[in-house]
Length: 220
Length: 393
Image (cartoon, rainbow over all chains, first blue to last red; front, side):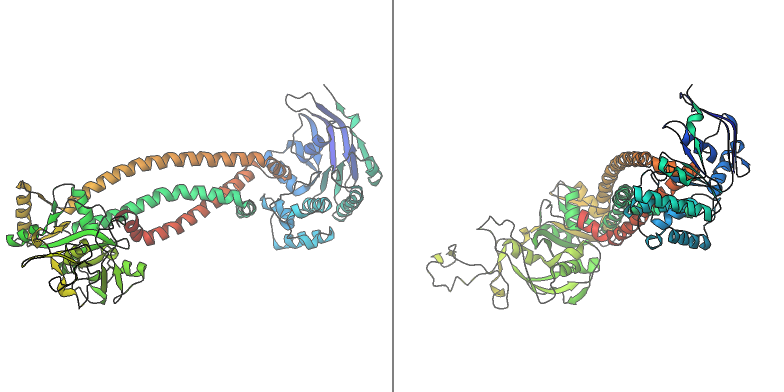
C-alpha cells in the first residue's frame, strides 16, 4: 500500500531534516507510528498524503507515485484515496453531523454527492452510534461523538488508506479504547490500510506493527 | 458552486449577528444614495408640476421663494403680506383672474388656507364627501387631513392659537367641516380650506359678539353715545359661527386693507400674462409678480448643488464601508485558518476556499440587494407622501 524509498524532506529555513531510507506498509495492515514530539510523524503523514512533496526519494501509495504528481492530481488523489482523522477532530461547528460527514464531497469535483452517498453517510453514522444525531450541531456533541463524526467523514469516500494523527489524543481512557476499536473495525470493514500516529504506548498492542520514528529523524 | 453556496449559507446562518451586521452595512450604503436620488426626483417632480401649473403669483416684495412656498405649498414661513386691494387692482385690469390666498393660521398643525371658490376650480379639486364652502365659519378639508385627524363632513375643527401665551389674543374658532376633498396627491390634501373671510375671523379682523346697542350690563358697556359704544374686556366674542350669531359678525376697518399672503394670478391669455409681468416688473410699488416655475427651478438648482456634496460624502462613506468590510473578511479568513487548513488537508484547493468566500460574499450581497430592493419599493411606493411630509408639506 505504502512504499517509501530514500525519502528526504526539510522545511525551508528550518533546522529539521527527515530521512527515511525505506518504509513499506502492506495493504490492510494497521501500523502505529511512534516517536518523540517533533520527530516528523505528522510530516510523514503529510508526505504520504501529498500535502508536502519530498526533496529526495519517492513516495508511492496505492500504486501511485504521489511525489511525482502535480498539485491538482495530488489533491484528487488525497480526497479519493485517503481518509484523514485528526487529534482535534477538525469539524466545522456551523455544519451539523451529516454535513460534516459529507463535507469532502462538497469541496471537490473529484467526488460526486449522490443520494446513495447520503444513504451511505447515514449508515456509517449508524455504525458509529451517532445515527440519531445526524442533524445535531457538532458543538453540541461529546468529544467521543465528535471523533466518531471525524472517522465517518474520513471513511465515507471508501479510502484505501486511513491516516490518523493522534486520533485518540483528546479522548478520555474509556472512550480511547472504544474509538480505537471502532476505527479498527471500520478500517477492516472497508478493506483499508491504517497508519496511525500515537503517543499512547498502551494502544500499541492493538496494531499489527509499530514504526519507531526515533530511528529516522536526524537534526542537521 | 452550489455546494460552496450551501456551505457558505450554513456559515452565514450560523454567524447570525456578524451576517446581519454585514448585510445592514451593505444595504445602508446602497440605500442612502438611491433613496436620496428617488426622493429628490420625486420632490423635483412635485415641486415643478405644481409650480408649472400655477402661471403667476402675486405677493409683497421680498423673498420670492417664501412667497412661492407659502402660496403653492402652504409653508409655515409667512411672506410679507399684501392687501385685498391688490386683488381688486388685478380684477380691474381685466387681464387676469385673481385668487386670493391667506395662509397664516393652523388647525391641529394643518394650514388653514383662506381663499375663494375659484381656487377649487383652478386646481381641479372636487369633493369626495359633503359640499363646498357656503357660509362663514365653514371649512373643507383635504383628504389627508381627514384621514389623519379622523374627521369627516359634519364634524368640527378648532383653529390653533398663534401663541398659547397671548391670553389677550384671538380665541380659537370652531369651524364646521362641511366637505372633504378628493385626494389630489398635492399639498391640497394637507390643507384646511376656508373662505378668506373666515381666515380673517380666525385672525380677529372680522368678529361677532352680543349686540352692545341693546346691552344693559354696565360692566360690559363703559361708555355710550349716539354714534358709538365702548365695551369693556368683559365682552365675549363668539368662538363659533352659528345660524343664531352669524348676523352679528362684522368687519372693522376697510376690507380692502385686509391682509393676504399671496394672490394666484391666472391671466386670460399669454399676452395678458406678459403685460401683467411687465407692469409689475416696472412698478416701483410694493408688489412682485413671480413665475413660480422659475423660482422653483432656482430652488432645485440649489438643492441639486447640495445633493452633489451629499453624493460625494456618501461616496467617501461607501469607500470607508467597503474597506471596513474587506477588513472584516480578511480577519474572518485569519480566524478561519484552521478550517481552511482542514479543507486543504482533506483535498480542497485555494480555489475551493476562494469559491467559499465568493459564495459567502455573494449571499451577503444578494441578501443586501433583496433588502435594498424591498426598502426601495417601499420608499418608491410612499415617496410622494414622504416628500410631502419631509420636504414640501
